Amino acid sequence: MSATWGWALAVVAIALGWFQWGWQGVLLAISVVVFWLLLQFSRAMRVMRQAAGAPIGHVDSAVMLNAKLRAGMRLMEIIPLTRSLGQAVEGEPGVPETFTWTDTSGACVRVQLVGGRLRQWSLERPAESPRAPLRAPLRAPLRAPLRAPPQHRWLRRLTRHPIRPPFRRPNAAPVHKITSSERADRHTV
Image 1 (tube, rainbow, N blue to C red):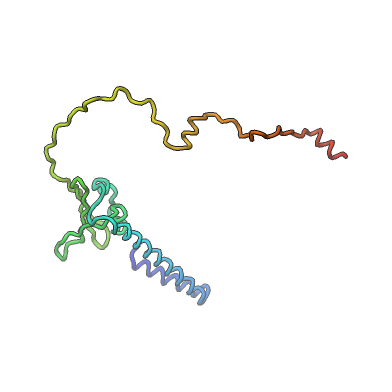
Image 2 (spheres, rainbow, N blue to C red; image 1 turned 90 degrees about the vertical axis):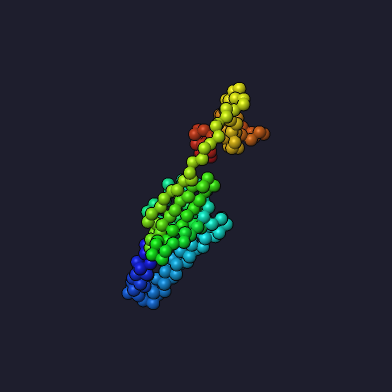
């Protein structure tokens, strides 16, 4: 939502509050508007705090970032995907804002923002270098394990006791169930 629409809705809420409940409605509408602004500020601060710990312009995987981007995203939506601030690209005054993120393999995502929204992005991969030939492993394993041991405590319990007996205290006396005839005898006395 653009800022114009947001402020227009705030004015409508204040006017509606005045016509419905008087000065109490105006206070309620102002409280709601201030709460909304605090939520937006809190969200922006959380995103910036998360990005502050990472190096500028670095991303874990440029290919994954490229797959997650959509046209129309704001920078505040892109930063949580990258977990870092983008490296600003110097350009001419008329050129849209451009940021880049690079991963460890050298792949780079270049993002162009127009009016604060993502307009265009591209993935740039490094030139392929000749690789060393792959070597075969020296020894292949003789046999693979039949199944991996369970890692979770609840899964271990399930595999150890596939069918559990019902819970019973070790020294509990047998429970005597009252039949309908005994119940009837109690009421007649």
